[in-house]
Amino acid sequence: MSFSILDFFTIGIGPSSSHTVGPMRAAARFARSLDGKPVERVRCDLFGSLAATGKGHGTHHAILLGLSGAEPESVELDLIPEKLEAIRSGQKLTLPDGRDIKFVEKEDLIYHRGQTLPRHSNAMHFTARDEEDNILSEKIFYSTGGGFIVSDEDWDSSGKNSGESGWLYHFDTAAELLEHCKETGLSIADLVLANETVNCSEARVRARLDAIWLAMQECVERGCRATGVLPGGLHVKRRAGPLLASLEKDYPSNSDAFSQLDWVNLYALAVNEENAAGGRVVTAPTNGAAGIIPAVLHYANRFTTSPHKDPVHRFLLTAGAIALLYKKGASLSGADVGCQGEVGVACSMAAGGLADWLGGTVKQIECAAEIGMEHNLGLTCDPVGGLVQIPCIERNAMGAVKAINAARLALSGDGSHIVSLDKVIKTMRDTGRDMMAKYKETSRGGLAVNVVEC
Ligand code: SF4
View 1 (cartoon, rainbow, N blue to C red):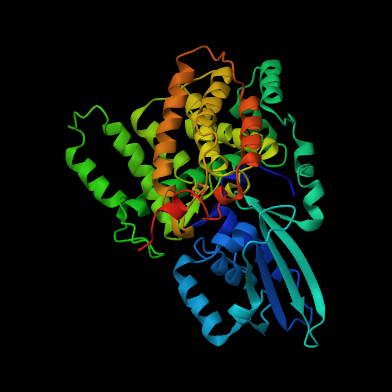
View 2 (tube, helix red, strand yellow):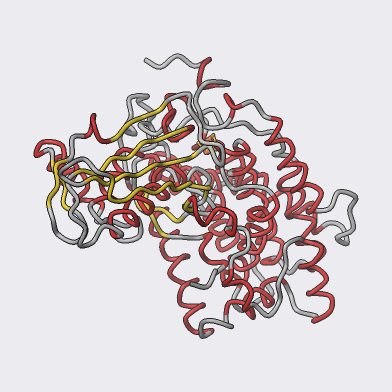
C-alpha cells in the first residue's frame, strides 16, 4: 500500500489518535486476521501509556469496537453506546466474520500499569485461543501517534515505507525538501502534489483534500452548536457555543483589536471539545492537537486573502510535508516525546501552511515551521484525569495563535534564519528522549498531579 501525506489527516473519532484511533485499527486488524480460525476467546493486554491513561482516552471502548470490526473512519458515532452496552451486558462480541465469542471485559482486557514494552510506550498484545486454551494467534501492535500503527514484525522496516519509493521527490529532511524545491522551482505544495499523483489521479487527491477540509468545517460547526459539560467527570464546560454567541452579537461592529484572536480561539475550542466528547474529528496530526490546523485554516479563510487559487489544498499539502519531517526525524506521539510532539508539531505544520497561504517563499515556509516548534520545545504531556481536556483544549487555542504569529514573523523576513527546521526537529527528539516518563501521557506528572479532581 502506498504512503500518502494525506494520511496525516485521517477522519476518525476522539478523543485520542494514539489511544483511540490507533488501538481501534489494531484491534480490527487482529480480529480480521482470525477469519475462519476456531477462536473461542480473544484477549488484549495494554502496556505503557495505554495502560496508564487508556481509560480516560477511550482505549477500552476502541478495543471492544475494533475487535467487532469497527474502523475509526466509518464507525457510526450514535450507535457506539448501544454496541458497547451489548458487549458488556451479554459478555460476548461479534467478530468481523460474524461469529460470536465470549468476551468478559475485566478478564479479557488487561491494563499492565507501570509496565512498558521495549519498543514503544503505546503497546497492545492480542491473543486468540481455541476451546482447549491453545494460542491460535498472537500479535503485538504499537500505536505510534497520529493513528498510525506498526506490528512487531513490521517494526524494523516501518521507517522505510516502500510506498514512498515510488515518489518523484524523496526527502527525509527539510534540507532535502528545500533542495528539491530549489532544483525544480516547485513550491513545497506542488512538490508534494507531484508525489501524491504518482499513485493517484490529481482529481482524487484534490477530492480527498476537499473532504478533509469539509470534515474540519463540520467539526467546528458541531462544536459551536453543542452545549453542556464534557464527559469524564472533570465537569469541564463547553465554551465554544457561548463564545460564538458573543462574537456574533458584536460582529462585525466589534472594534476590539483582538477580536480576530477570539475567532481563532473559538475554532480551536470547538474542535477540541468535539474531540474530548468522542466526536468525529480530523487527526491533524493527532487528535489531541486536532484543533490547531482547522483553527488557522478558518482564520485564514475568514480574515485573509491568498495569492493562490487553491490555498486550502496548498495549506494542507505543505502542512503534511512538515508532518512527515517530524515523523521521520522525531515523533508525533505525546507518549513518546511529550506534547511538543502533538501541539508543537501541529503548530509547526499550521505555521508553514499559513506562510504558504499568504504567499511565502519556500524559505519563509521552512522558517515559519521552525519558529512554530522552537517555542514549543519541552512542552510536556500531563492530561488531568487522563482525559484529553485540561490542558489539551486550551493548549490548541494557544498553539493556533502561536502558529499565526510564527507565520507573520517568518514573512516579515526573507526566510534566512539561524536555527534550521532540521535542527529544531533533532532538538525536539533529543528533548523528548531526556523527558521523564511521568511527562509523557502517563498522567503521573505536571498538572495531572497538581490539579485535584473533584
Ligand atoms: S497534553 Fe498534549 S500530548 Fe498530552 S493528551 Fe493533551 S494534547 Fe495530547
